[in-house]
Length: 319
Image (cartoon, rainbow, N blue to C red):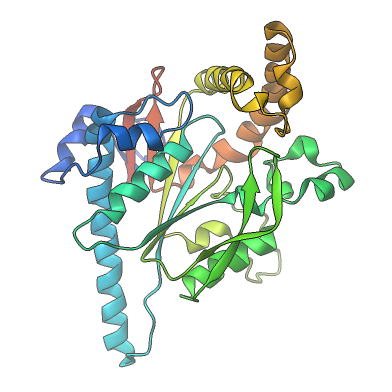
């Protein structure tokens, strides 16, 4: 049984083509400009205003309904307990998916759209990159070639961060990651102070982990999410996008002498492509198959991309 097949009788999802999905926009206004989209999108991601109209405005409207329902439930709980001192907690949106599939663009576009709702909510965005173990530890534990796999993250720090956010604590700190040096920046943090909405993006954020045999509570990252999104595409397409991105970075960011990957900019095109193919096959493809793709069915919404890197199908979990 493939519960993600639109023809599957027992699927927990409803499926929509991009055109069908776009009709749910209703009167949701377009609050972004073309120049802003250019600033928000990642390398090799062709999202434009038309894609925002087709996909993201309907998604913004759906999320608005979920946030409003969450706020209503909060007020009802206040009345139920007759306790006005109960603090409203942030609405957390998790975004998962493979490397090179476009998670960062989706997260940034959503952040801007949600912050421009008429209610002007405070929206923050955090990625899991900062919670990777420092390279020094990864090398010591022989995990550098497992970077991005579940065991390469400081899971305790991730859980403490999300617990602090969900407890409505003020000034919760998250570590900062440098894609230039390919490492966590020592002593540098970003502070998140009681947002209305937090977008939490990372390849393995829907990973459930191992269940204890004794029934003790073991929290997962997704336990803190109010809504989870998975960005999906065929494996062959993600492979193609990863190689294209690597080759583009070789001509741009990798040329910086401070870049961890600077050495790759000095190679011939064929040698650099061979390196990229090896990184894909030995690290990113394994992580996709072993850890990331198996979490897809845990998402509330799946955005499936086609060959042009634009979304072709939307799967929404039934209530």
